[in-house]
Amino acid sequence: MTGESDATPNNFIRQMIEKDVANNKHNKLVATRFPPEPNGYLHLGHAKSICLNFGIAEEFDGWTNLRFDDTNPDKESEEYMAAIKRDVSWLGFEWKSLCYASDYFDQLYDYAVQLVKDNLAYVDSLSSEEIRTYRGSLTEAGQPSPYRNRSPEQSLELLEGMKKGDFEEGEHVLRLKIDMASSNINMRDPAIYRIKKTHHYRTGDKWNIYPLYDYTHCLSDAIEGITHSLCTLEFEDHRPLYNWVLENTGPPGKPEQTEFGPLNLEYTVLSKRKLIQLVTSGVVDGWDDPRLPTIAGLRRRGYTPAAIKEFCNRIGVTKSAAVIEMQVLENCIRDELNETAPRRMAVLDPLKVVITTWPQDDIETLTVANHPNQPEMGSRNIQFGRELYIERSDFEEVPPPKFKRLISGGEVRLRSAYVIKCDQIIKDDEGNIIELHCSHDPDTLGKKPEGRKVKGVIHWVSARDGINSQIKVYDRLFNRPDPLAADDFTEALNPDSLTVYDSAVVEPSLKGEVAGARFQFERQGYFVIDTASTPEQPVVNRVVSLKDNW
RNA sequence: UGGGGCGUGGCCAAGCGGUUAAGGCACCGGGUUUUGAUCCCGGCAUUCGUAGGUUCGAAUCCUACCGCCCCAGCCA
Image 1 (cartoon, rainbow, N blue to C red):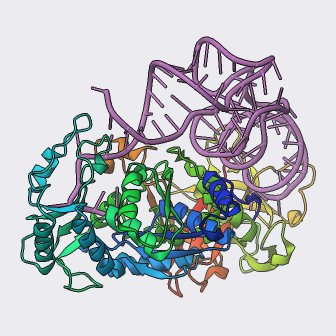
Image 2 (cartoon, rainbow, N blue to C red):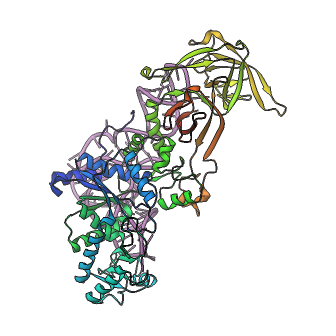
């Protein structure tokens, strides 16, 4: 692909790992994990993490686990797990092991029991509101819970009761005993187990308590032998806790957490919570709506794994909170499809043209290259006849300055065919242009016209042979670059994010193309055959427009 | 006003005491072109948040200040 970054992506994490390997750290092993919670579909932000985790392990001959962080059965589902697996695979990555945090529930519980015995954890019986109050604030130290000095024996008994289901949700919680006065709020005796009597899709009804993230994640990393635990910036404050748990439980592995900046993209949202809101409210048509920055949405939109990976390369990995412009993403898919997509012609908004100088029933077969600079992509035949369709926007009665297309009395080149001249405009009673009568210059097929210059070229489709297609053109989902900065982000939704062209006409060669096939419709953009296509009528999504410097 | 981070052109981002301060996206020219695309050529930071300091030499080291992001779930 043109423009593809040739160098290995260099960033501070890669440099750190390179150093680790050189220093024989972790016995030169680079083991990473991609640990999504199965509570939604993956999006571009996850793609960045996936490319980083799988990419870096691959580069250093290590491995990567896919681990579901399934510690909150209230929000998680198997549908999401299936979608996540499909998306990671589609991106082209292979995990070493498919893991689940729930696989470690027994071990996690054993470690918790040991922490209680070591007087490093206790059962607190304060309500969640009381715990919040006791925690203090950003500027005030917290106060110890009255239950903090409960004896290990008593805590153990209560913990056992919590596990067996003797208590109601919220009655007790298991907390680490660290430092209520810590300037890092995460260290003020964080809860590590809560009572939750929810059925778990993997462990069934075995557990009435479920471990929390800070406790689960580091131990899961250690148990799996992860060496480099890469996560986003918001967990930076959690690193001391991550290390505290590992130091005080002593699992076999010694993973180290390193944080990088999350992805932000203009004119969209990359937050599972916000995305789920758009999906459930019906603002968009499911998780794979082509307007969404989900992997499933991008796939349906016509993006390729290579383009998404290239995007991840181009944006880099740093510790700053970067906001990437949409053009960076768009240019990745343009660069790829410019090279690989066969060219076709399609008219989204048809305007009929009658070539009055062309005999009524004559048909001429034209052989047209599938790609202007790649002859190896071959050619196809298209029919030229008396009646054609051109794009309504390619004709102007009162043209703006520098308009290079068809005007009254003017000439224009029909792409791969003849130069025509507009002789007459036909209008209906209301004054709408319904048809154009043109004459053609028979001496302009494959050659320049004699004695004059025709600068415009427009696309067309034969009225007799063209087939109807539904073409969907997408625009940005939000009309401001930072929708989350609005009081209510749904108010920033772009009402014109989808335009459907029901009477589009495409070359007959598009008939029967399989979903996922990509083309360039000349002068317009790159398009992909949608899964909703039927053998009779192709349904086509616009991936991205061509650049338009006019 | 506690703690943790981040500040290099419009947006990303290399840079790791001695370089004319990479590269991509965007933008502005000019050339080729039967896609206003692609491609090609050229332009685009005397300066690295600001102010001091160290040094023969600072985007890189030190100090202070300024700005922005994250943290007070029994979410992850």
